[in-house]
Length: 396
Image (cartoon, rainbow, N blue to C red; front, side, top):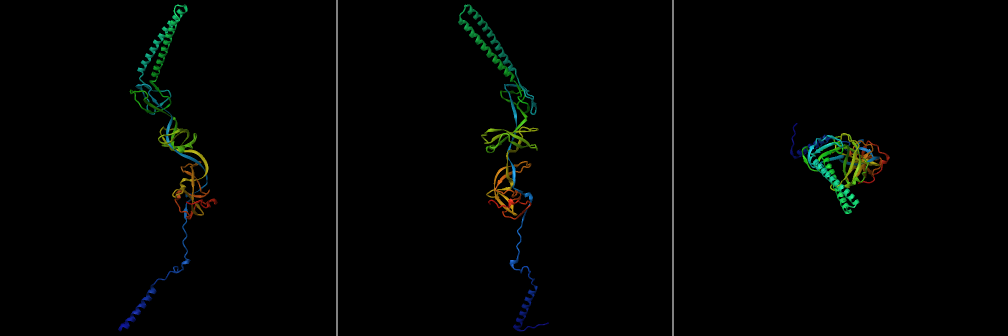
């Protein structure tokens, strides 16, 4: 079909026809409006707030517990009976055969020092005593003779008194010589060294043939039948420690725990470390050695208190608090902590602490639950008792 448009009027009519057709095409091609979007804004329902699910393993009930107050202690094992055998005289060691680990009995000879010099000194002292004894006999005969002469009137009493003085001097000299012989004999006996206790040699500090002076260390002997732990603690901690209190210790190299009791408490505070030494005697020493390191808990007493695990007490706010669940919401309770220890009959190492400020039987969140916002909607595996629905005492 051929169209011929003449003049400006025809152009105007053609343009109007084309605009009208385009508008009709746009209306027919536009998608239909969603009926739900055309609804008024007042009829839209908001989404429900999410509920945080807390497993039962992250919760517990705050109830009264029999809490055993424990004090951490540590130290090294020491033998109660230990001795260092030293030389009592100077000389050359002629016998010293014992070595580390050897057993000895009380009174057993452990070392000898060359006695030649001391034997000669003893003979010298004994001979001096014999000479002094001879002088006593001479003075005694002279005195007896003078006494007879005085009785017969041949000499004066003054001469008798002089002879008596000579006899007394001779007797004193003889007694001094006897004492000197005893001293020499004692020195000779000290050249033979014996062990004062039964035990094992822990150190050999000299060798045969070595010349030693007086008070040189030769051997150390320890009795492992009685061991104690020497624990150091602060003066504040030592205030509640009493003789007879029992402790449970874990020693290095030994899986099974051992028990010990406080035997002695040092009355002095150490000058350098400002610590107090406490000695705990072990009930069983089988297979133990001196110097082993041990650590454990000393039981100071028991109390019936509201207690929770220490990791449930949070300190990420200015005030210490505990998270609880009441009416399916998280609440924060400011608390004060007290006695720390373990539950009576507890087998693990969990530390429990006394708390005040948490209603009894409240559902408490453990430390494994993490920090939750107060008022958060939660659901727990533990059903709280009526007492746990109380409002918080205070908020941080």
